[in-house]
Structure formats: C-alpha cells, structure tokens
Image 1 (tube, one colour):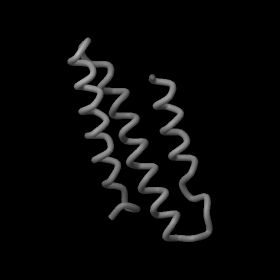
Image 2: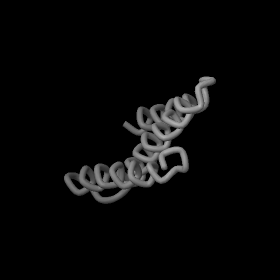
Image 3: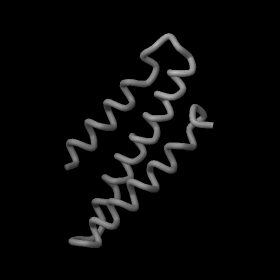
Length: 76
C-alpha cells in the first residue's frame, strides 16, 4: 500500500511541467499537488491507530492532504 502511494505521488510530481502549454502546466501542477498531498496525508494517517481506526485515519489524512494540495498557487 505504501509503495503504491509513494509511486503515485512521484508520478504526479514528475508529470508537472511536461508540456509547452502554460494552462495545461498549471492544471498538471495542481493535480500533482492534490494527488501528492493525498498520498502523503494517507501515509501519515496510516501510521495512527490500528484496525478500523487506522483506516479512518488514513482516509482522513488523504482527504486533508488533498485539501492542502489545492492550496498550491497553480490551483488558485
């Protein structure tokens, strides 16, 4: 699970800035922030508790991380 989230975050960050279209670059950067934030938040949330509590903390961490990722300048 952790490896998949790390790979997803790395792919999202690697995709940012890969085109010559400025609008598409902004959208990719925003998506990278959202997916990266969700991955990091999910990883951090997964470190808390056990059983159902761990699942809830992982989901909450991913949601909060995605929300923080939308605060990038590219998403504004």
